[in-house]
Amino acid sequence: MTGREASRGPDRYEDRVQAGPGGIMTDEVGVITGEVTVVTRRAPGGRAAIDVQYTGAEEWYTLSGSPAPLPPGGLAALHTQVVDLLRRGGCAEAPR
Image (cartoon, rainbow, N blue to C red; front, side, top):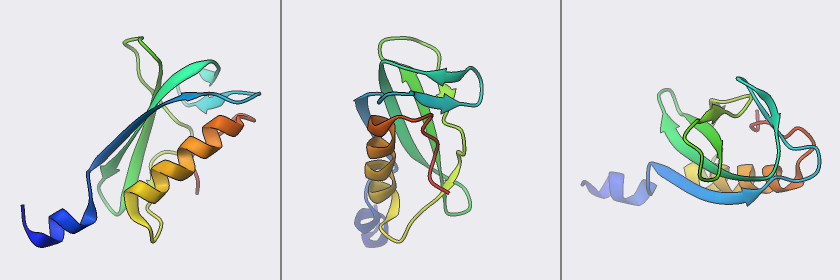
C-alpha cells in the first residue's frame, strides 16, 4: 500500500442501523424499515455505492440515489452522513 492509499482510508464502511420513522428508500423494493446493515463503498468516478439489507438477511438492496458523490471529507464522511440519514428515516435516500 502506498502512502497515498493509506491516507485515504478504507474502501468500505459497514454499520448496523435502526431505520427511523418512515424507513429507508431502496431501488428494488421501495421502503424498508427495522434494523438494517448499511455498506458504503468506493465506486468509480469519485462516487460511492451504498447498499442496505435487513440485518441477518441475504438480499442486498441499493439505497435510492446511490451511487452518491464523495464529499470533501471522503468515504468516511459520506458513510457517517448516510448512517445519520437512515436513523432519521423519512424514506431516506443517498445524499446528492
